[in-house]
Amino acid sequence: MNVPQDLKFTQDHEWIRVENDCAFVGVTDYAQSNLGDIVFLEIETVGETLAKSEAFGNIEAVKAVEELYMPVSGEVLEINPALETSPEVVNKDPYGDGWMVKIKITDPSELAGLLDAAAYTKLIS
Amino acid sequence: MTTKITPFTKFHQSMGAHMEPFAGYLMPIEYAGITAEHMQVREKLGVFDVSHMGEFWVKGPKAFSFIQRVTTNDVAALWDGKVQYSCFPNGQGGIVDDLLVYRVNQETYLLVVNAANIEKDWNWCVKNATEMGLEIGKELYNASDEIAQLAIQGPLALKAMQKLTKDNVVDMEYYTFKKIPFAGIKEVIFATTGYTGSGGCEIYCANEDAEVLWNAVMEAGQEFGIKPIGLGARDTLRLEMGYNLYGHDIDDETSPIEASLAWITKFVEGNDFIDRPLLEKQKADKTERSLRGFIMKERGIPRQHYPIVNAAGEVIGEVTSGNQSPILQAGIGMGYVKAPYTKIGTEIFIQVRNRNLKAEITKTPFIQPS
Image (cartoon, rainbow over all chains, first blue to last red; front, side, top):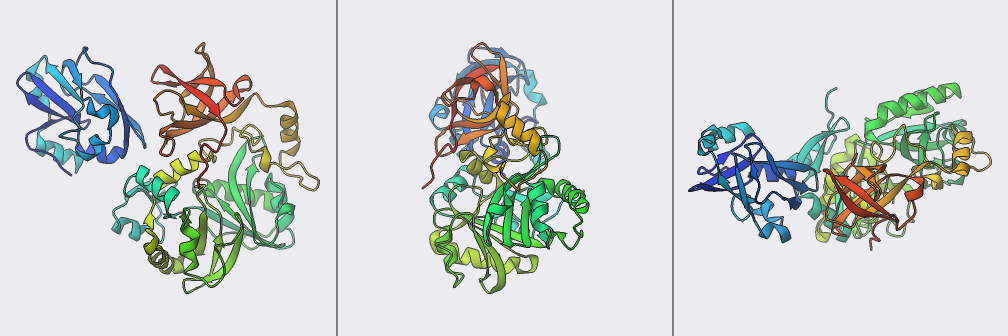
Protein backbone atom coordinates (compact mmCIF):
# COMPACT_ATOMS: atom_id res chain seq x y z
CA MET A 1 0.00 0.00 0.00
CA ASN A 2 1.39 3.38 -1.03
CA VAL A 3 2.00 5.85 1.85
CA PRO A 4 4.01 8.93 0.68
CA GLN A 5 6.61 10.18 3.16
CA ASP A 6 5.88 13.89 2.62
CA LEU A 7 2.20 13.79 3.70
CA LYS A 8 0.36 13.80 7.03
CA PHE A 9 -2.57 11.46 7.71
CA THR A 10 -5.68 11.09 9.87
CA GLN A 11 -7.05 8.02 11.64
CA ASP A 12 -9.96 8.25 9.16
CA HIS A 13 -7.67 7.77 6.14
CA GLU A 14 -7.49 11.32 4.83
CA TRP A 15 -4.14 12.80 3.78
CA ILE A 16 -3.05 16.43 3.77
CA ARG A 17 -0.30 18.15 1.79
CA VAL A 18 0.61 21.56 3.22
CA GLU A 19 1.69 24.37 0.88
CA ASN A 20 2.33 27.59 2.83
CA ASP A 21 -0.92 28.41 4.68
CA CYS A 22 -3.02 26.31 2.33
CA ALA A 23 -3.29 22.55 1.93
CA PHE A 24 -4.65 19.87 -0.38
CA VAL A 25 -6.76 17.08 1.14
CA GLY A 26 -7.75 13.65 -0.20
CA VAL A 27 -8.16 10.05 0.88
CA THR A 28 -5.36 7.50 1.12
CA ASP A 29 -4.54 4.62 -1.18
CA TYR A 30 -5.73 2.31 1.58
CA ALA A 31 -9.11 4.10 1.74
CA GLN A 32 -9.70 4.04 -2.02
CA SER A 33 -8.68 0.39 -2.17
CA ASN A 34 -11.18 -0.53 0.53
CA LEU A 35 -13.98 1.57 -0.93
CA GLY A 36 -13.50 0.14 -4.39
CA ASP A 37 -15.03 1.85 -7.44
CA ILE A 38 -15.89 5.43 -6.56
CA VAL A 39 -19.06 6.69 -8.24
CA PHE A 40 -19.10 10.34 -7.22
CA LEU A 41 -18.04 12.90 -4.64
CA GLU A 42 -20.59 15.03 -2.84
CA ILE A 43 -18.82 18.13 -1.55
CA GLU A 44 -20.93 21.22 -0.95
CA THR A 45 -18.87 23.07 1.64
CA VAL A 46 -16.90 25.50 -0.52
CA GLY A 47 -16.62 28.82 1.30
CA GLU A 48 -17.38 27.27 4.69
CA THR A 49 -14.97 27.28 7.59
CA LEU A 50 -15.00 23.89 9.29
CA ALA A 51 -13.43 22.58 12.47
CA LYS A 52 -10.94 19.72 12.57
CA SER A 53 -12.76 16.35 12.18
CA GLU A 54 -15.91 18.01 10.83
CA ALA A 55 -17.31 16.43 7.64
CA PHE A 56 -16.59 18.36 4.44
CA GLY A 57 -18.40 15.94 2.15
CA ASN A 58 -19.25 12.37 1.24
CA ILE A 59 -17.69 9.81 -1.01
CA GLU A 60 -20.12 7.45 -2.77
CA ALA A 61 -18.64 4.13 -3.86
CA VAL A 62 -20.36 1.03 -5.20
CA LYS A 63 -19.74 -0.72 -1.91
CA ALA A 64 -20.57 2.03 0.57
CA VAL A 65 -20.83 5.71 1.32
CA GLU A 66 -18.30 7.33 3.69
CA GLU A 67 -18.00 10.79 5.20
CA LEU A 68 -14.91 12.88 4.50
CA TYR A 69 -13.40 14.71 7.46
CA MET A 70 -11.22 17.81 7.79
CA PRO A 71 -7.71 16.79 8.92
CA VAL A 72 -7.34 20.26 10.50
CA SER A 73 -9.61 23.30 10.88
CA GLY A 74 -9.87 25.53 7.86
CA GLU A 75 -11.86 27.16 5.10
CA VAL A 76 -12.77 25.04 2.07
CA LEU A 77 -11.45 27.10 -0.84
CA GLU A 78 -11.91 24.85 -3.82
CA ILE A 79 -13.06 21.39 -4.96
CA ASN A 80 -11.01 19.44 -7.48
CA PRO A 81 -13.05 20.15 -10.64
CA ALA A 82 -11.76 16.99 -12.39
CA LEU A 83 -13.62 14.76 -9.95
CA GLU A 84 -17.02 15.99 -11.14
CA THR A 85 -16.67 14.11 -14.42
CA SER A 86 -13.96 11.59 -13.48
CA PRO A 87 -14.36 10.43 -9.86
CA GLU A 88 -12.41 7.28 -10.73
CA VAL A 89 -9.26 9.42 -10.62
CA VAL A 90 -9.42 8.98 -6.83
CA ASN A 91 -9.00 5.22 -7.38
CA LYS A 92 -6.18 5.68 -9.88
CA ASP A 93 -4.17 8.48 -8.28
CA PRO A 94 -5.37 9.13 -4.72
CA TYR A 95 -2.39 11.33 -3.71
CA GLY A 96 -2.03 13.26 -6.96
CA ASP A 97 -4.81 14.06 -9.44
CA GLY A 98 -7.30 12.56 -6.99
CA TRP A 99 -7.03 15.39 -4.45
CA MET A 100 -10.46 16.48 -3.24
CA VAL A 101 -10.36 19.93 -1.66
CA LYS A 102 -7.96 22.81 -1.22
CA ILE A 103 -8.29 24.41 2.21
CA LYS A 104 -6.92 27.46 4.05
CA ILE A 105 -5.58 26.29 7.39
CA THR A 106 -6.81 28.36 10.32
CA ASP A 107 -4.75 26.76 13.09
CA PRO A 108 -1.39 25.38 11.86
CA SER A 109 -0.63 24.02 15.34
CA GLU A 110 -3.18 21.22 14.68
CA LEU A 111 -0.83 19.74 12.07
CA ALA A 112 1.40 18.40 14.82
CA GLY A 113 -1.42 16.11 15.98
CA LEU A 114 -1.63 14.25 12.67
CA LEU A 115 0.03 10.93 11.81
CA ASP A 116 3.24 10.81 9.83
CA ALA A 117 3.83 8.18 7.15
CA ALA A 118 5.37 5.71 9.59
CA ALA A 119 2.52 6.02 12.11
CA TYR A 120 -0.11 5.74 9.37
CA THR A 121 1.59 2.68 7.87
CA LYS A 122 1.44 1.10 11.31
CA LEU A 123 -2.26 1.95 11.58
CA ILE A 124 -3.21 0.16 8.36
CA SER A 125 -0.96 -2.86 8.73
CA MET B 1 -19.12 -19.26 15.19
CA THR B 2 -16.00 -20.04 13.17
CA THR B 3 -15.90 -18.80 9.61
CA LYS B 4 -16.15 -21.65 7.12
CA ILE B 5 -14.21 -21.85 3.89
CA THR B 6 -15.20 -23.46 0.59
CA PRO B 7 -13.17 -25.90 -1.53
CA PHE B 8 -12.33 -22.91 -3.78
CA THR B 9 -11.06 -20.51 -1.10
CA LYS B 10 -7.38 -21.12 -1.87
CA PHE B 11 -7.97 -20.24 -5.54
CA HIS B 12 -9.58 -16.91 -4.60
CA GLN B 13 -6.72 -16.06 -2.28
CA SER B 14 -4.08 -16.96 -4.84
CA MET B 15 -5.83 -14.72 -7.39
CA GLY B 16 -5.74 -11.73 -5.06
CA ALA B 17 -9.42 -11.54 -4.11
CA HIS B 18 -10.56 -9.20 -1.37
CA MET B 19 -12.06 -11.73 1.06
CA GLU B 20 -14.60 -11.03 3.79
CA PRO B 21 -16.84 -13.17 5.98
CA PHE B 22 -20.31 -13.46 4.44
CA ALA B 23 -23.12 -15.58 5.89
CA GLY B 24 -20.59 -17.52 7.96
CA TYR B 25 -18.22 -18.19 5.05
CA LEU B 26 -15.01 -16.47 4.03
CA MET B 27 -16.00 -15.36 0.52
CA PRO B 28 -14.45 -13.29 -2.30
CA ILE B 29 -16.09 -9.85 -2.41
CA GLU B 30 -14.14 -8.49 -5.38
CA TYR B 31 -11.09 -9.15 -7.53
CA ALA B 32 -10.59 -6.47 -10.20
CA GLY B 33 -13.33 -4.14 -8.95
CA ILE B 34 -17.08 -4.49 -8.81
CA THR B 35 -17.87 -2.44 -11.91
CA ALA B 36 -15.31 -4.21 -14.11
CA GLU B 37 -16.52 -7.61 -12.87
CA HIS B 38 -20.13 -6.60 -13.49
CA MET B 39 -19.39 -5.67 -17.10
CA GLN B 40 -17.33 -8.84 -17.56
CA VAL B 41 -20.46 -10.93 -16.80
CA ARG B 42 -22.81 -8.76 -18.89
CA GLU B 43 -20.48 -8.85 -21.92
CA LYS B 44 -18.57 -12.14 -21.69
CA LEU B 45 -18.51 -14.65 -18.82
CA GLY B 46 -17.41 -14.94 -15.25
CA VAL B 47 -17.24 -17.59 -12.56
CA PHE B 48 -18.68 -17.23 -9.05
CA ASP B 49 -18.00 -19.50 -6.09
CA VAL B 50 -21.44 -20.03 -4.60
CA SER B 51 -20.55 -23.03 -2.46
CA HIS B 52 -21.93 -21.23 0.57
CA MET B 53 -25.47 -21.94 -0.64
CA GLY B 54 -27.35 -24.66 1.26
CA GLU B 55 -28.67 -27.88 -0.24
CA PHE B 56 -31.34 -30.20 1.20
CA TRP B 57 -32.39 -33.47 -0.41
CA VAL B 58 -36.02 -34.53 -0.06
CA LYS B 59 -36.75 -38.14 -0.99
CA GLY B 60 -39.39 -40.83 -0.79
CA PRO B 61 -43.16 -41.17 -1.19
CA LYS B 62 -43.88 -38.13 0.99
CA ALA B 63 -41.38 -35.83 -0.72
CA PHE B 64 -43.91 -34.25 -3.07
CA SER B 65 -46.54 -33.49 -0.45
CA PHE B 66 -43.90 -32.15 1.94
CA ILE B 67 -42.55 -29.63 -0.58
CA GLN B 68 -46.08 -28.74 -1.67
CA ARG B 69 -46.83 -27.96 1.98
CA VAL B 70 -43.74 -25.88 2.82
CA THR B 71 -43.37 -23.91 -0.43
CA THR B 72 -45.74 -21.45 -2.12
CA ASN B 73 -45.17 -22.47 -5.73
CA ASP B 74 -46.94 -25.46 -7.29
CA VAL B 75 -44.61 -28.47 -7.23
CA ALA B 76 -47.06 -30.33 -9.48
CA ALA B 77 -46.01 -28.01 -12.30
CA LEU B 78 -42.48 -29.49 -12.24
CA TRP B 79 -41.20 -32.33 -14.37
CA ASP B 80 -38.00 -34.37 -14.12
CA GLY B 81 -35.13 -31.99 -14.79
CA LYS B 82 -37.12 -28.80 -14.16
CA VAL B 83 -36.18 -26.10 -11.64
CA GLN B 84 -38.63 -23.79 -9.87
CA TYR B 85 -38.18 -20.57 -7.88
CA SER B 86 -40.22 -20.62 -4.68
CA CYS B 87 -40.33 -19.52 -1.05
CA PHE B 88 -41.02 -20.95 2.38
CA PRO B 89 -43.93 -19.11 4.05
CA ASN B 90 -43.31 -18.81 7.80
CA GLY B 91 -46.77 -19.52 9.21
CA GLN B 92 -47.33 -15.86 10.08
CA GLY B 93 -47.49 -14.35 6.63
CA GLY B 94 -43.74 -13.75 6.32
CA ILE B 95 -40.99 -15.56 4.42
CA VAL B 96 -38.51 -18.00 6.01
CA ASP B 97 -36.37 -17.96 2.86
CA ASP B 98 -36.56 -18.04 -0.91
CA LEU B 99 -35.22 -21.12 -2.68
CA LEU B 100 -34.92 -23.20 -5.80
CA VAL B 101 -36.67 -26.58 -6.09
CA TYR B 102 -35.08 -29.13 -8.44
CA ARG B 103 -37.15 -32.18 -9.39
CA VAL B 104 -34.91 -35.18 -10.14
CA ASN B 105 -37.91 -37.52 -10.24
CA GLN B 106 -41.30 -37.82 -8.59
CA GLU B 107 -39.71 -38.94 -5.33
CA THR B 108 -36.42 -37.01 -5.36
CA TYR B 109 -35.99 -33.25 -5.03
CA LEU B 110 -33.15 -30.88 -4.25
CA LEU B 111 -33.89 -27.65 -2.36
CA VAL B 112 -31.26 -24.92 -2.68
CA VAL B 113 -31.44 -22.25 0.03
CA ASN B 114 -29.55 -19.11 1.07
CA ALA B 115 -26.30 -19.53 3.01
CA ALA B 116 -27.34 -17.11 5.74
CA ASN B 117 -30.49 -19.14 6.39
CA ILE B 118 -29.25 -22.74 6.24
CA GLU B 119 -29.74 -23.41 9.94
CA LYS B 120 -33.09 -21.58 10.15
CA ASP B 121 -34.39 -23.31 7.01
CA TRP B 122 -33.20 -26.69 8.20
CA ASN B 123 -34.95 -26.33 11.55
CA TRP B 124 -38.10 -25.17 9.81
CA CYS B 125 -38.04 -28.08 7.36
CA VAL B 126 -37.27 -30.60 10.11
CA LYS B 127 -40.22 -29.34 12.17
CA ASN B 128 -42.64 -29.66 9.26
CA ALA B 129 -41.16 -32.88 7.88
CA THR B 130 -41.40 -34.50 11.31
CA GLU B 131 -45.07 -33.58 11.53
CA MET B 132 -45.60 -35.18 8.13
CA GLY B 133 -43.70 -38.33 9.07
CA LEU B 134 -40.58 -37.97 6.94
CA GLU B 135 -37.46 -39.62 8.29
CA ILE B 136 -34.93 -36.90 9.12
CA GLY B 137 -31.43 -37.66 7.87
CA LYS B 138 -32.83 -39.94 5.20
CA GLU B 139 -35.97 -38.57 3.54
CA LEU B 140 -34.89 -35.05 4.48
CA TYR B 141 -31.13 -34.69 4.32
CA ASN B 142 -28.90 -31.64 4.78
CA ALA B 143 -26.07 -31.91 2.22
CA SER B 144 -24.92 -28.29 2.56
CA ASP B 145 -21.44 -29.18 3.83
CA GLU B 146 -20.86 -31.82 1.15
CA ILE B 147 -21.68 -29.92 -2.03
CA ALA B 148 -19.60 -27.31 -3.84
CA GLN B 149 -21.13 -25.00 -6.42
CA LEU B 150 -19.85 -22.74 -9.18
CA ALA B 151 -21.99 -20.33 -11.19
CA ILE B 152 -20.64 -19.59 -14.65
CA GLN B 153 -22.63 -16.64 -15.91
CA GLY B 154 -22.65 -14.47 -19.01
CA PRO B 155 -23.54 -14.70 -22.71
CA LEU B 156 -20.51 -16.91 -23.48
CA ALA B 157 -20.83 -19.18 -20.43
CA LEU B 158 -22.70 -22.14 -21.94
CA LYS B 159 -20.55 -22.11 -25.07
CA ALA B 160 -17.42 -22.34 -22.92
CA MET B 161 -18.86 -25.08 -20.71
CA GLN B 162 -19.90 -27.14 -23.73
CA LYS B 163 -16.21 -27.94 -24.20
CA LEU B 164 -16.26 -29.94 -20.98
CA THR B 165 -19.08 -32.38 -21.74
CA LYS B 166 -20.46 -34.55 -24.54
CA ASP B 167 -24.02 -33.88 -23.38
CA ASN B 168 -25.61 -30.92 -25.08
CA VAL B 169 -25.77 -27.96 -22.73
CA VAL B 170 -25.87 -24.97 -25.07
CA ASP B 171 -29.46 -25.72 -26.08
CA MET B 172 -30.78 -26.43 -22.59
CA GLU B 173 -33.87 -24.43 -21.69
CA TYR B 174 -33.69 -21.80 -18.96
CA TYR B 175 -34.30 -23.22 -15.46
CA THR B 176 -33.69 -26.87 -16.34
CA PHE B 177 -30.95 -29.24 -15.21
CA LYS B 178 -29.41 -32.61 -15.85
CA LYS B 179 -27.03 -34.93 -14.07
CA ILE B 180 -24.11 -35.46 -16.43
CA PRO B 181 -20.45 -36.48 -16.52
CA PHE B 182 -18.47 -33.25 -16.73
CA ALA B 183 -14.77 -32.36 -17.03
CA GLY B 184 -13.81 -35.91 -16.10
CA ILE B 185 -16.04 -35.85 -13.01
CA LYS B 186 -18.41 -38.80 -12.94
CA GLU B 187 -21.48 -36.71 -12.20
CA VAL B 188 -22.39 -33.09 -11.63
CA ILE B 189 -25.75 -31.33 -11.55
CA PHE B 190 -25.67 -28.93 -14.47
CA ALA B 191 -28.43 -26.32 -14.23
CA THR B 192 -29.24 -23.38 -16.49
CA THR B 193 -30.09 -21.21 -13.51
CA GLY B 194 -28.41 -18.10 -12.15
CA TYR B 195 -28.75 -14.80 -10.34
CA THR B 196 -27.40 -12.38 -12.92
CA GLY B 197 -29.85 -12.26 -15.84
CA SER B 198 -27.02 -12.77 -18.32
CA GLY B 199 -27.54 -16.50 -18.84
CA GLY B 200 -25.18 -19.34 -18.09
CA CYS B 201 -25.26 -22.17 -15.62
CA GLU B 202 -24.77 -23.32 -12.07
CA ILE B 203 -22.82 -26.52 -11.49
CA TYR B 204 -23.06 -28.60 -8.32
CA CYS B 205 -20.46 -31.23 -7.45
CA ALA B 206 -19.15 -33.14 -4.46
CA ASN B 207 -16.55 -31.23 -2.43
CA GLU B 208 -13.85 -33.72 -3.43
CA ASP B 209 -14.42 -32.94 -7.13
CA ALA B 210 -14.32 -29.17 -6.63
CA GLU B 211 -10.66 -28.63 -7.49
CA VAL B 212 -10.97 -30.55 -10.76
CA LEU B 213 -14.10 -28.54 -11.60
CA TRP B 214 -12.47 -25.14 -10.92
CA ASN B 215 -9.38 -25.90 -13.00
CA ALA B 216 -11.43 -27.30 -15.89
CA VAL B 217 -13.82 -24.33 -15.92
CA MET B 218 -10.98 -21.79 -15.89
CA GLU B 219 -9.12 -23.64 -18.64
CA ALA B 220 -12.19 -24.07 -20.85
CA GLY B 221 -13.12 -20.43 -20.33
CA GLN B 222 -9.67 -19.05 -21.04
CA GLU B 223 -10.17 -18.57 -24.79
CA PHE B 224 -13.38 -16.64 -24.02
CA GLY B 225 -11.68 -14.45 -21.42
CA ILE B 226 -13.24 -15.96 -18.29
CA LYS B 227 -12.59 -14.16 -14.99
CA PRO B 228 -13.48 -14.83 -11.36
CA ILE B 229 -16.27 -12.61 -10.00
CA GLY B 230 -16.93 -11.67 -6.38
CA LEU B 231 -20.10 -11.32 -4.36
CA GLY B 232 -20.03 -7.52 -4.82
CA ALA B 233 -20.80 -7.80 -8.53
CA ARG B 234 -23.24 -10.64 -7.83
CA ASP B 235 -25.26 -8.08 -5.88
CA THR B 236 -25.19 -5.34 -8.54
CA LEU B 237 -26.02 -7.90 -11.26
CA ARG B 238 -29.05 -9.24 -9.42
CA LEU B 239 -30.19 -5.72 -8.56
CA GLU B 240 -30.26 -4.65 -12.23
CA MET B 241 -32.58 -7.62 -12.79
CA GLY B 242 -34.79 -6.71 -9.85
CA TYR B 243 -34.16 -10.08 -8.21
CA ASN B 244 -34.96 -10.17 -4.50
CA LEU B 245 -32.23 -10.72 -1.94
CA TYR B 246 -33.27 -12.33 1.33
CA GLY B 247 -32.50 -10.12 4.33
CA HIS B 248 -32.92 -7.04 2.16
CA ASP B 249 -36.03 -7.19 -0.02
CA ILE B 250 -37.73 -10.09 1.70
CA ASP B 251 -37.61 -11.46 5.24
CA ASP B 252 -39.77 -12.88 8.01
CA GLU B 253 -41.77 -9.63 8.11
CA THR B 254 -42.62 -9.37 4.41
CA SER B 255 -45.28 -11.45 2.70
CA PRO B 256 -44.82 -12.99 -0.75
CA ILE B 257 -47.79 -10.93 -1.97
CA GLU B 258 -46.25 -7.65 -0.79
CA ALA B 259 -42.91 -8.70 -2.25
CA SER B 260 -44.44 -9.05 -5.73
CA LEU B 261 -43.95 -12.81 -5.49
CA ALA B 262 -47.58 -13.58 -6.35
CA TRP B 263 -46.20 -15.25 -9.49
CA ILE B 264 -44.65 -17.97 -7.33
CA THR B 265 -47.61 -18.11 -4.91
CA LYS B 266 -49.96 -20.51 -6.65
CA PHE B 267 -53.50 -20.74 -5.30
CA VAL B 268 -54.27 -23.83 -7.36
CA GLU B 269 -56.05 -27.03 -6.45
CA GLY B 270 -53.82 -29.45 -4.58
CA ASN B 271 -51.35 -26.77 -3.43
CA ASP B 272 -52.29 -26.58 0.25
CA PHE B 273 -49.24 -24.64 1.47
CA ILE B 274 -48.64 -23.02 4.86
CA ASP B 275 -50.29 -19.56 5.09
CA ARG B 276 -52.40 -20.16 1.95
CA PRO B 277 -55.68 -18.79 3.41
CA LEU B 278 -53.94 -15.72 4.79
CA LEU B 279 -52.05 -14.98 1.58
CA GLU B 280 -55.09 -15.66 -0.60
CA LYS B 281 -57.04 -13.07 1.40
CA GLN B 282 -54.13 -10.64 1.13
CA LYS B 283 -54.07 -11.03 -2.62
CA ALA B 284 -57.83 -10.38 -2.88
CA ASP B 285 -57.82 -7.43 -0.46
CA LYS B 286 -54.64 -5.84 -1.84
CA THR B 287 -51.76 -5.07 0.50
CA GLU B 288 -51.00 -1.76 2.18
CA ARG B 289 -47.50 -1.73 0.75
CA SER B 290 -45.69 -3.38 -2.15
CA LEU B 291 -42.14 -3.95 -3.23
CA ARG B 292 -41.24 -1.82 -6.23
CA GLY B 293 -38.22 -0.90 -8.28
CA PHE B 294 -37.24 2.73 -8.77
CA ILE B 295 -34.64 4.71 -10.68
CA MET B 296 -32.99 7.90 -9.43
CA LYS B 297 -33.81 11.03 -11.42
CA GLU B 298 -31.18 13.04 -9.54
CA ARG B 299 -27.62 12.04 -8.77
CA GLY B 300 -27.54 9.81 -5.71
CA ILE B 301 -27.14 6.21 -4.63
CA PRO B 302 -30.07 4.70 -2.73
CA ARG B 303 -29.10 2.25 0.01
CA GLN B 304 -30.90 -0.14 2.36
CA HIS B 305 -33.00 1.61 5.06
CA TYR B 306 -33.05 5.04 3.41
CA PRO B 307 -36.58 6.51 3.82
CA ILE B 308 -38.80 6.91 0.76
CA VAL B 309 -40.89 10.09 0.95
CA ASN B 310 -43.53 11.85 -1.16
CA ALA B 311 -43.40 15.42 -2.52
CA ALA B 312 -44.67 16.71 0.84
CA GLY B 313 -41.79 14.96 2.60
CA GLU B 314 -44.01 12.36 4.33
CA VAL B 315 -42.48 8.91 4.71
CA ILE B 316 -44.19 6.45 2.35
CA GLY B 317 -41.71 3.59 2.46
CA GLU B 318 -38.16 2.37 2.85
CA VAL B 319 -35.37 1.30 0.51
CA THR B 320 -34.48 -2.41 0.80
CA SER B 321 -31.73 -2.59 -1.87
CA GLY B 322 -29.95 0.02 -3.91
CA ASN B 323 -26.78 0.84 -5.78
CA GLN B 324 -25.36 2.49 -8.86
CA SER B 325 -26.32 0.53 -11.99
CA PRO B 326 -23.15 0.02 -14.06
CA ILE B 327 -25.28 -0.40 -17.21
CA LEU B 328 -27.66 2.54 -16.68
CA GLN B 329 -25.06 4.75 -14.96
CA ALA B 330 -27.74 5.82 -12.50
CA GLY B 331 -28.86 4.94 -9.04
CA ILE B 332 -31.44 2.13 -8.93
CA GLY B 333 -33.14 0.46 -6.03
CA MET B 334 -36.04 -1.47 -4.61
CA GLY B 335 -38.19 -0.73 -1.64
CA TYR B 336 -41.62 -1.04 -0.09
CA VAL B 337 -43.98 1.84 -0.85
CA LYS B 338 -47.54 2.49 0.34
CA ALA B 339 -50.40 1.54 -1.97
CA PRO B 340 -51.05 4.96 -3.59
CA TYR B 341 -47.44 5.15 -4.80
CA THR B 342 -46.98 1.73 -6.39
CA LYS B 343 -47.90 2.62 -9.99
CA ILE B 344 -45.13 2.62 -12.60
CA GLY B 345 -44.09 6.20 -13.34
CA THR B 346 -45.03 7.58 -9.90
CA GLU B 347 -42.68 10.27 -8.65
CA ILE B 348 -41.12 9.47 -5.27
CA PHE B 349 -38.17 10.86 -3.35
CA ILE B 350 -35.32 9.04 -1.65
CA GLN B 351 -34.02 10.64 1.51
CA VAL B 352 -30.24 10.67 1.19
CA ARG B 353 -28.55 12.38 4.14
CA ASN B 354 -31.45 14.78 4.76
CA ARG B 355 -31.92 15.63 1.11
CA ASN B 356 -34.92 14.36 -0.81
CA LEU B 357 -33.72 13.22 -4.23
CA LYS B 358 -36.21 12.66 -7.02
CA ALA B 359 -36.82 9.09 -8.22
CA GLU B 360 -39.45 7.25 -10.23
CA ILE B 361 -41.21 3.91 -9.74
CA THR B 362 -39.96 1.72 -12.59
CA LYS B 363 -40.75 -1.72 -13.89
CA THR B 364 -38.19 -4.44 -13.26
CA PRO B 365 -35.91 -5.79 -14.61
CA PHE B 366 -34.23 -2.42 -14.95
CA ILE B 367 -32.30 -3.65 -17.98
CA GLN B 368 -32.68 -6.24 -20.75
CA PRO B 369 -29.35 -8.09 -21.02
CA SER B 370 -28.48 -9.48 -24.44
